[in-house]
Image (cartoon, rainbow, N blue to C red; front, side, top):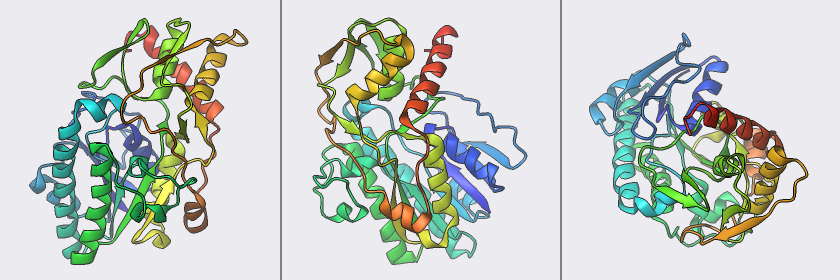
Length: 339
């Protein structure tokens, strides 16, 4: 298949493009480098990959690119760490709605022309920001209160775009909800606010690389947001990419939605202990609690049974392996002066 991946230079999409190429697909990637600036990916020179520097809000360009593609993986969005939810509350709605509308306009046109078979939209675990049922099944999307953050609300809107385009125009879709991606390759976002965390100044991106950076810089006690009891399911990017590929390929995924995640919950304090042990061995961990952000969800654990049953998907990378990989990568980035 020929697949258009939007936001191709992004964190999760980088894993997705590599996964699709590995399985023999042709990939066209589009990105305007608005988050990190120009970035290089290992697959940039792959013969099956074409990269287009462009803005996904350009409906004409998107329509041109989608016209001869079999699938679209809609990953482009303004997205960042938890500081983004507060720093860019309006932009996360307005910019992402423009990106989403442009992408769906192009998808509808390509489908009506007889080529495009499906759009796979990347939603977010943040759509379950207000959920109180755990583990949270896909069906909770219509039962839980709407997300409180503008980012979570807009990701919920992305899912409504998919269902509405199917209802009105017959556009086939699959909704993929990644949960808490961990992995390597994410640098400082251009627009992220620099925030002091104890004695370390860092751009808030995601919790695992931020913890690794603080521990590697010698912070002791280690500063964490809140009391550390926040529960997440940290899922490696390679696992998420495999799940998204299955959403692209499998007929069983048509017009349906899937939680893509490890089912294993980990508290922030447990994650911090894994990072600390990777760097300091048996040296006792001391930690200090900083005031949490408003939208720091306390509990987020998905039900993954549907993805296992329908797609045959299961996450396989243990959290300890992810921690080891990320600590090694952050160490190298610090040594090179890039973090």
